[in-house]
Every structure is written in C-alpha cells, then in structure tokens.
Length: 301
Image (tube, rainbow, N blue to C red; front, top):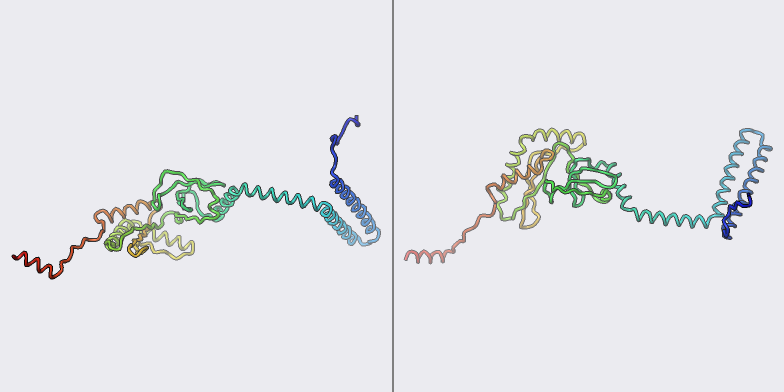
C-alpha cells in the first residue's frame, strides 16, 4: 500500500541550483545545532555561578540565532534579491493602478484631520462651489451654487473626489455659523456717476443691516475672543477698486445672517438701481465765440 503512494509527481525534478541551496541550508542547520549543543554543554560544565551560566546560555542562543539568519541570507541572497525586486515591481504597479484611490483616501483623512468643513457648509474648491450634503472615504457631494459668485443653487449635484483636497485649497464660506460677511462688486466706468452709486449703496446697506447689526457685533466679539482674533468691524462699508485705468469697482461688504447672502445682495442692488442707472450726463457742445457772433448777427438780420 505504501508503495502505491507517490508523494512526488512523475517527471518532477529539482533544479540543480535549488537542490544545492537546500543542501547548503540543511548543512547550516546541522552545524548550528551541533555547535549550540556543544557550547551549551561546555557552559553548563565550566560555569559555576547560576546567574552567569544563565546569562551565557541566553547570549549563546541569541548568537547562534544571528549566525543562522546570516547564513541563510548568504545562501539565499540571490533568490532573496530576485524576490525583493519582484515585490517592488508588484508594489509599484499596484500603486500606479490605484493612485487615485490612494489619493482619495489620503484626502479624506486630510480633511477629517484638519476639520476643513462639515455637512451643510458652503465650500469652494477650484471651480466647484456648493453646499456639502454628503461625505465618504472617496468623494464629497455638494449641491452646486452659482453660477460664478451668485448665491443661489443651480439644482445640480457635484461629486468631488477627495483627491482634490490633497493638492487644492478649500474655501469655506460658512466659517461662522449664525452670522458672517458678504462681499460683492459693482463695476462702473470712470466717467459714470459712481459717487452717487457709492452713497446709495451705503444708505441701502445700513438700512437692510440695521435690525441685526448689534447682534452681529456681539456674535463676532464672542467668536474672535474664542479664536484669539481681532474683532472685525461689522458696519457696512463700500470701498473703491481700480482694476483698469478706465474702470472703477465698488466693493460692498455687509454683515449677513447665515443663508441670506443672496437676499441681501439682491435687495441692495434693487434699491441702488431702482431709479438710477448712474450713466454720465450728456454734455451739450460749446459754440466758439466768433461763430456764435456770426450766428447772432444772422439771427438779428
């Protein structure tokens, strides 16, 4: 019955190099075992102190273990080098194939560790802007807001891969929970009546923000104290910007309640442009003296 059991398949042969390595490994183990046994026997017979004998036995055991590992590395060095190269090649191929997934997981850990934003915050990364409605390990879902700087939802959903959070800065427009600031720009030409528009913007902004201005001031004072920041001025303001020699922009900054940025902006713009377009007044041509005298003479005739 034992003769019928064949553990080695027919036609199987060990390669010459592999057989040599196996024989060398077996000889190494045999030499190490014999040497360890003889060394332990010598220590037990010659060392009288129990503490010293125990220490020498442990040290000798560790020394023979290191010798065994060193011998294995020497014997199997070429094969280990080939195996290491194969593992490195497989690892590089795996990283290249799953680079985006790795970046998404890294971005998820980065935004969670830095607490960049929470659900419900309005964020912008690159050209994507919207309110966060879902977060996962691979992507962040937002409801699009826009287009451009408009504070209104478009009805579209954007799924942003978390890999963007590794290389791109994130703008969180919901840094404060209850109140914040809203900034928008009104462009004018240099010859327009932008001074009247500036006065009207200030009057309209003060009128719309007056009911909750003190609440905003108290809230900003508390937030600044908690975060160690200087208390910002909360009064509405209109500043000038000159992006080009023939253009002037009115930069309007107003305190707003959370979720009312678009409402306040549209209310101010409606007030300002309801009755005025602030275009330059047409100038009547001036008549020169001699010509004017000639015309008068003809009329008198």
